[in-house]
Amino acid sequence: MSALEEAAARLRGGGVVAFTGAGISAESGIPTFRDPGGIWDRFDPEEYGTWDGVMRLAMTRPDELADFLAELRRTMAAAEPGNAHRALALLEEAGLLEAVITQNVDGLHQRAGSRVVLELHGSLSRVVCLVCGRRATVDRDDLLASLDRAIVGLRTAFVPSLASLLPRCPACGGPARPDFVAFTEPVQGLPAARSMARGCETLLVVGTHGDVYPAAEIPVVAREGGAAVVEVSTGRTFIDSDLRIRGPAGRILPALVDLVLA
Image (cartoon, rainbow, N blue to C red; front, top):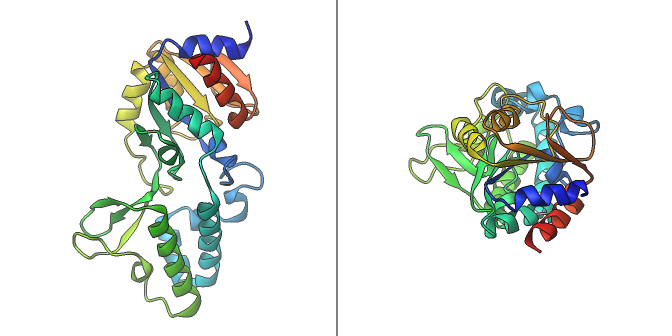
């Protein structure tokens, strides 16, 4: 039995939870953060990866922040769900996949059709009000329009504060920032993610090195709960898996789902 056939046999039993990282979205054109040539190779994470750093950049080096946001805007405008995202949505539709736990903030799982998605690092498809704390969903057009306004404001005008460039909260009118988890901020929904991992039969790990904590606890928690850990990756990782399939997620997952649903 091949590794792909063995993985398919495990997934047919249901009770599957997927745990995904940047690698699954890299095939959709979204750069990874920590790989060579990734985002943090080109932009200092202490400046661009923290909310305080971004606020300082807006005041002191607005053109550089505008360059960063312009790259983010180009990336988000072009990114579409890949074959791997769609394969996971098919597993959920078949009643075999219970949830996706993702470290990604791009919303591609939802756009592919996945309904139960827990986003540990937040989402660019939401904003959170800095005054009242209300969270609201935004579609891609609204996100791109907000980025356009911020880029133009940074390039053409004196910026009294970053808050002056942010969209307004529909509830209280306060400034609302993108609901991503910056460095030094706590991840979102970790207790629920641990519970999902602890209760699953198979954890399907896709596109993550497993070296960023506390998200990297998820495979450990799954194994402690008795789950099999099936990993799809293109290189070496820190995941302690029962079964590892080497190859790009966009090729491996559709082939795997075809076997499962045959």
